[in-house]
Image (cartoon, helix red, strand yellow):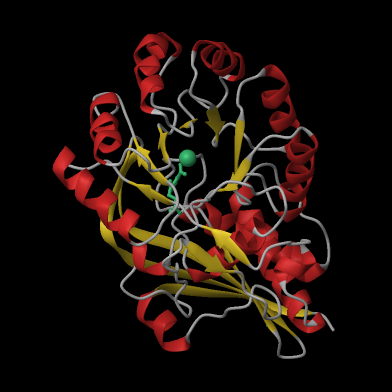
Length: 359
Ligand code: OSB
Ligand code: MG
């Protein structure tokens, strides 16, 4: 049994609510889906976590499309390994599709393949920057009522201590955290210390991604644990960040670290070092969400992740919707591979472009 073709499908889904972060405002989820077609009729699916513009990291959809079309897919069809530097999210999408194909043939779920130990995971939600504090409070109220077990608030200079304090006052017992997406500099340490009295679970990625020592210095000044996201691109840098004291918590995103092999290596080293970890998200459709859910079933994912229900993002997901129960948990899928497939009609409705590599 082998691979007969790789198809790229560009999809564009409106987000129910614009998602504003320090790096820009997202109104749509634009994603490349990778379909790995086997010569036995079995298909595997993967999703590239990249967005339309290179704002979170260097990758963006137009570039990822070319890398997949001209380098990664032809190499997979030829059975060779591509000599390409970087582009971790593009590479992860193809890797995920090929793994899904293999696991569907073997009738093994991705969660089982990864050594998952949970059949339900605990969910958090990541809320964007709002126009004003009232609208933020309304959003928080909705997701607390829906059962979410951790609320993460995006912050940036000018939208930080004050709105977060308002949320803390309205929800004294909620598990709260904040994510700056690298919007601050080392000179903001004193200001960021203003978050310390607010009892946050963590402050995510306050400084630019290559500021390992500056994160360590900042962590030494803050009571609030620092969690790193953008910085952690490999097992190597994750180990360095932990040993330097640049973070006390790890956000793992499979695409950011270049694939499932790298994610497993990070998982294992983080567990060895006893560091709490959670599974990040990139506003994925059901295809990418299924991978995150399977990862989050692994033993090291001890904190609620950004693994929210489909209805937090889309009017209609591409797959059967993912749902969060009233207790804030979501069921891990146990079907073969990632356990879901795109619904033909739902996919057709949001498809912008398709490209077939191979026959
Ligand atoms: O920093 O975690 C981030 C979304 C896009 C890019 C970066 C991030 C995010 C989120 C949303 O915070 C998480 C999600 O709900 O998928
Ligand atoms: Mg983040």
